Amino acid sequence: MTTGRLVGSVAALVALAGVIVGALALARAARRIGNGTGRRGALVALGAGLAGMVTGGLVVAAAEGGPGTGYGIVGGFVALAIGLVAAVLGWLALARSRRTV
Image 1: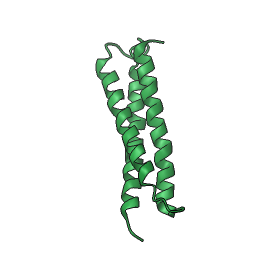
Image 2 (image 1 turned 180 degrees about the horizontal axis):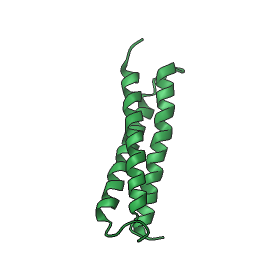
Image 3 (image 1 turned 135 degrees about the vertical axis):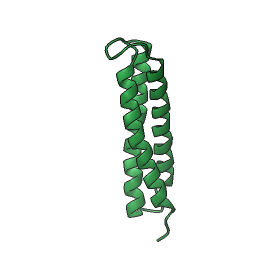
């Protein structure tokens, strides 16, 4: 496994974790389970999504070849896409947590 592939894969996994946390935070903000509003989870999802997108973008920008060359360009593009989903879920959960009942 090359460095580019490793960094691209880790960025995609961080973004995937952001999607999971964002979905849970969105569900928590919508249902008002317990005392929490899902704000902390929303911020974590937003941060993980942005981190995945930035890292994925750096991997794609540094890649000198296409898919299969070992530069991690596929992982970078996956991290960009999943990071965008995580950021949107985090943003939606954050917007819902600010609402008052």
